[in-house]
Length: 214
Image (cartoon, helix red, strand yellow):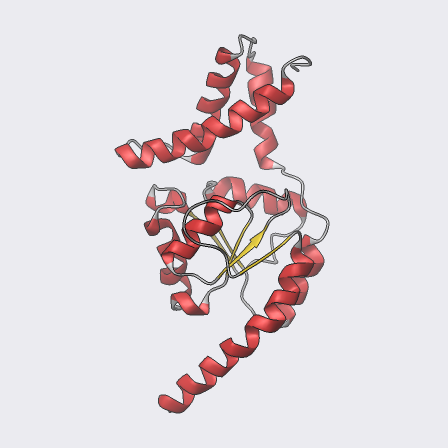
């Protein structure tokens, strides 16, 4: 659509997308993920002086209803569930967007829960966003492994108190936010290896808890 400014547009669009979300929760002027994403798109095209037709706007926004799945996802999640873990989404996207994506990727029956921060009108990394997982799963922080794609999300989850694994697919630098994830890797295979090591102390903790609370 924008052959000379496509990469620049994408970069500006995505940065404003998150900036708008965080600015809105800081000031108490909430709009959901879809609305803030569209606002950021309009800003980016205005800033770069490129025309945004209604057709182009709809086509670009529709991409968020059919995001491609990384090739290792289905097999890895199946293996994780076979180990007895529950697997849930905690996302800033709206529930409608999440459901549409899962259906198109054939993953609608894989997840045990789809949690959208839109349900309480906030965005990660707000602490109230991460609190959703505790309330829905009825688990403590220590019993939930938070797996993040974005470095800022890994930092936010770690601040909240979750054991955290960062799937750093883009080889990004560690965020300078005075914390680090408990594990990191380039793909979900590295997550599986981490879970093998992580599950032993978790099982020991559960056994100790059972002994202390017969």
